[in-house]
Image (tube, rainbow, N blue to C red; front, side, top):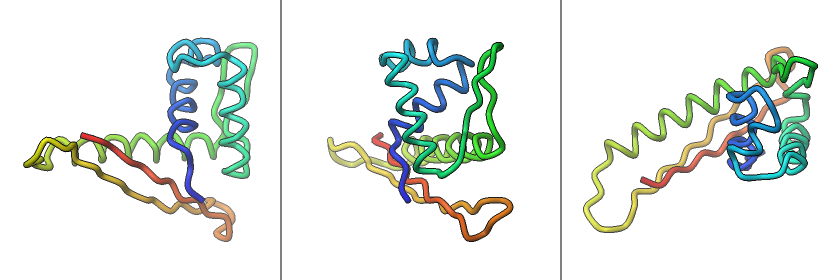
Length: 118
């Protein structure tokens, strides 16, 4: 399964801000749209990623894994784009797919597709 990077970026905004409301402002969406993004991403993953509480949000184990992998891919992608020479006026395009397995069930796996434009 390939995850939508828009959903992933919304997920990261929630993790960074600690709140659906602050994340909504950051990604220029309504709070209900942010909630919908999380629901769609959780449906794709097949597992709960975020738990809401009185003191903000908390990531589940699967949420921690997804956040870590997405950050790693984003950093790697950005580094590659900065170091790839671009000889014409078109931007460099870079993509990567990472396959992950569930830590307790190897039959469950996910693929994350990342793309960047430099």
